[in-house]
Image 1 (cartoon, rainbow, N blue to C red):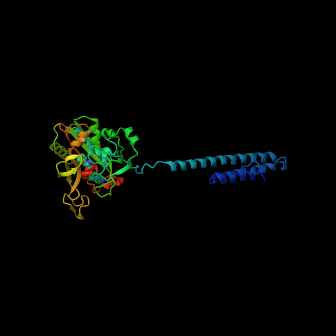
Image 2 (cartoon, helix red, strand yellow):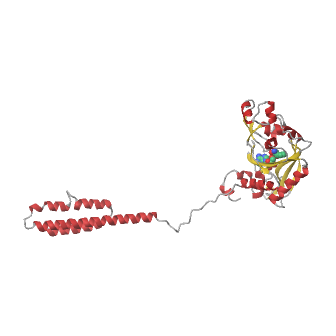
Image 3 (spheres, rainbow, N blue to C red):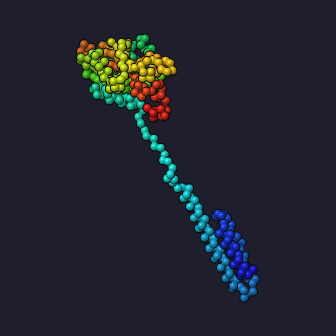
Length: 371
Ligand code: FA5
C-alpha cells in the first residue's frame, strides 16, 4: 500500500459515510475505517515499520490526513442525521391550526331542577318560603299524623317502600325525637321512603306557629309500575298555608294564579272534588293534555300521555283537616289552612312537551339537551 492508496481509501470512506442512512450504519462505518484496533487506518499504520525508511514520513503523513478526513466526514454525517431526526420530531409534534377545535360542552340545569326553581320562584312571589324535608321518613309523619292509620285503605294508594319493619326502632325513635304525639305514646315506629311530601305539613307545623306559608319541593318514592306519567322515583312540591281567615277560595286562587304564572293564559285548568284523609274538603287539579290538545286522541289513536283522558293530573289539595291541626297543637276554631301536593315531572312534561315522564330520568343527554 502506498500514500496514494490512503487518499483513495479516504475518498471511498467519505462517500460511504455521507450515504449512511442512520446511526447504526454510521457506527459500523466508524468501526470499519476509524476503529482503533481493526480500522483500515490502524491497519495501514501497522505496515509503517515494514516500509523503506525513505517512504515512511510521506506514508505516515498520508495516513494521518486520511484519518482526519474520515473523522471529519463521520462528524458531519452524525450532525446531519441528528438534525434530520430533530426535524422529523418537530414535524410530528406540530400543532395543526387548520383542525376544527374540540367541542366545549356547556353544562345546564336538568329540566326537573329548572321546574323546581320556577315553582319555588312563583310561590315565593306569593309569600311562600321554600323548605326541604327528609326523604327517609317515619310512618308517623307519612301516614298516621295525616289520618292514615295502619289499617286505612288510603295506604294502598301510596304504594310504599318500607325501610325497616315495626318493632325494632325504639332507640332510633328516641334519638331523632320523632313527632311529639308519637314520642308521647312511646310506640315503636316504622321507617319508609316517603311516598309524598305531605309529611312535611306535620313537621313544619310542629316547628312553627301560624301564620305558616311554605312550599316543599322534594323527591318521593313509590313501588309502582312505570308508564308515561308515573315514575317510581319522582318529585313533588307540597304547599301549606295556615292562618286565621283562610278558605277554599284562597286555595283555588293561589293554585290558579300559580298555573297562570307558570303556563300563561293558554292552559285549561280543571278543579274537581277528590278525597284525601288529611284534607277536608279535598280537590284535585288537572291541566289539559298538551300531547293531544286536550282531546284524548292523537293521529296514532288514544293519547298515550294522558291515557285518553285529555287531562294530566297535577296535584291533590284541600283544607287541612282539623285533626291534623289539633295533633300539632293548633286550635282549629282559630286557625284554618290549605295544603296541596303536586308532581314536578307532570309540570315539566307540560312545560317542555315531554310525552313520557321516563325521559327525564333516563339520563340520555341527547334528550336532556333538547328540552
Ligand atoms: C298525594 O301525594 C297527596 N299527598 C297530595 C295532597 C297534598 C293532597 C296536600 C292534599 C293535600 P297523589 O298521590 O294524588 O296525592 O299525588 C299528587 C301528585 O303527585 C299527582 O297528581 C301527580 O302529579 C304526582 N304523582 C303521584 N304519583 C306519581 C308518580 N308515580 N310519578 C309521577 N308523579 C306522581
